[in-house]
Image (cartoon, rainbow, N blue to C red; front, side, top):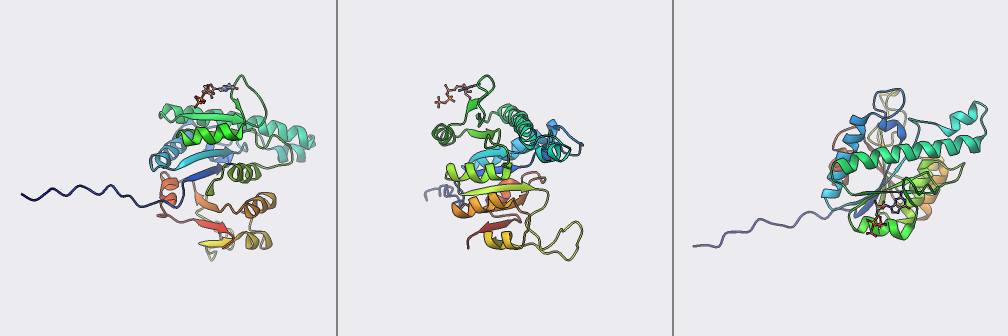
Length: 249
Ligand code: GTP
């Protein structure tokens, strides 16, 4: 009798061990004009769970454009600093919604806020966040950097650098960076790879210049992908879906 061959347990090594997922608040509102669509939050949570199941450590930075946009408040005559702090509170609302959706799927999650609000979440402590992720928990960073004048993209680049992430995954409504707006220009083509410098000099609006510079200085690649497609986060992590990688290469 010949020995039964054991099924191979060797899986393809993923290029990413730890990533930061950055998404705008608008993703969470789905087709609504503002606020949170619970079905969309649940779908995003499912996508994150799928990534964790592949052995990837995930932390999240979310925006607040679905609740309050600091910049638009300022443009309507509000103090920029006050408007930005209101935006930071909006981020906390989104962070709690994401935590709730993840925990409904039995994904252990910790919210850490840059502005202390101990009754509702932990304060941001880098080493504790690292330990949470090593234990398989998703860490959601709330309240931006805690400072006005900084975007959530910059928060993403900052936290990804602090957490030694292998990449920032920026979830958008398109599958990468294009030569022109693909919704307006049918001849626009997508870059597979592009350098930080080209993004800055061509003003390609991937992220604001502060965020790009921070990622560049700390050599954290930025992966632009479509987060609106169910399951796409895992597919991009595995290299099976379109995206654009912004790096020094
Ligand atoms: P370990 O150190 O691995 O045990 O991590 P842990 O997060 O499970 O332990 P900890 O005792 O720090 O936290 C237990 C629970 O309390 C978790 O749900 C934390 O998110 C929460 N928690 C911890 N610190 C704070 C805080 O300052 N404010 C709030 N609101 N919750 C907190």
